[in-house]
Image 1 (cartoon, rainbow, N blue to C red):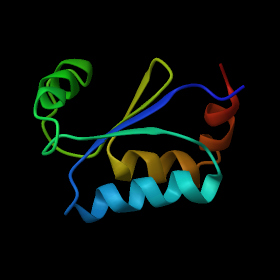
Image 2 (image 1 turned 90 degrees about the vertical axis):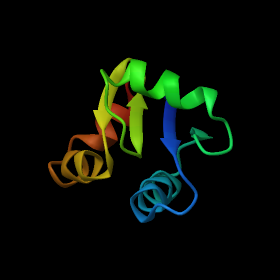
Image 3 (image 1 turned 45 degrees about the horizontal axis):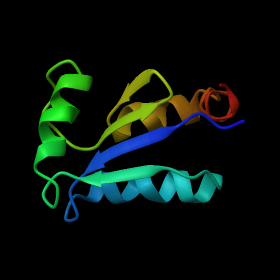
Length: 87
């Protein structure tokens, strides 16, 4: 079973677009919050990420992955697919 995947993004952000594209390519569903459209989500993102204010911020289950470069590093290390399948 797939864990819950949550991303906090902004529409104009190329790193955010890359994150969403990677999850789409992997065939996994995810919940995306655009912090410009839902400003209250910005505070949630900052709190959940330990104070990070940059987008995207990515969460897989209880794990805070970080940003897009962290997601890419996980994928290139061969660890992302297992994380996407864990519960």
